[in-house]
Length: 425
Image (tube, rainbow, N blue to C red; front, side, top):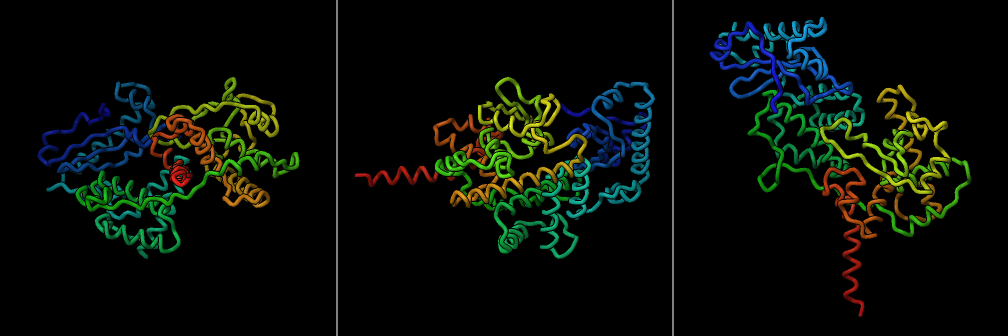
């Protein structure tokens, strides 16, 4: 269903058509902020290329619907007048031009986003992510920008210079500096998103898009190294058999790791955000935090509460057990997204530190971390014959392919074990 648009009642459509231009305002529902508001933007299409310009007017979807329906409330009337003024300003510039061009229009309209340089796109999007409180994603784009800037040795790179050959050289520079294929993939994902934005804005050509299947001569980042992260059954038994000093920091952070493992491999951020209202009967039900800022509608994850997880909650949980109280007192209400991220990272760091020390104490060769808990959960279930679809759902994955990447190392191990049986005679 197409998004309803706004036109100015005084615009002469015939004059616009004579210039080969269409002009409307629309509600940019794709880019919603954390408070559910979005910007109303102008959309100009010229020679089949659309470009978008902010009216600097934001509202929620309900207000936009009221605006379309002709609501006479003072707030809606003010917003409607402002949007009509922006439409009229753009219209007068367009009809007053001997020949239309985006560059000439933008100089008169005063829009700053005219460059085909990727770095301003990075800066605009990083600022947007910060406003939306998406701290983790903001950092991904920050580091991708830094890596690209270090590679280019300057702050200017037009989209037409981002070719297959350029991306291959960038990849070599990252891997050659002790970076991993995974890091290359993270950075390239950012480049692709901004390149698509530039195509949308008319600042890059779709036919020059360099990303895609290698077999078609396009660039695809290298596959990540499949480093085994799951613990063996013997390692897990050693951890769960170990008795730390009651009430000690070692017991505290070991319990958090055990809670993650026993609760569907839940990550540290989701543990921090759990509230007592998420406890429903004999289960914990929650939505993954990482899906809150994406377009995906993930199913709520359900975790069976068992004696061991209830003991951990009883030992370290907040009291009293009120519905809107965080189960574990890592966060407090009113924290900014940045402060919240800092506390979650500190928890992760502490859990990793104590589990690393415990691994040495128990002579476990594998590296133990918060991520190990998640992979071990998935792998133990797979070893037990649990269906991959169930594991995928319990992890909150949107695709079986993601789950299968967790289980690849286990599958390799199993194949070797089966093959060795050929010599059992």
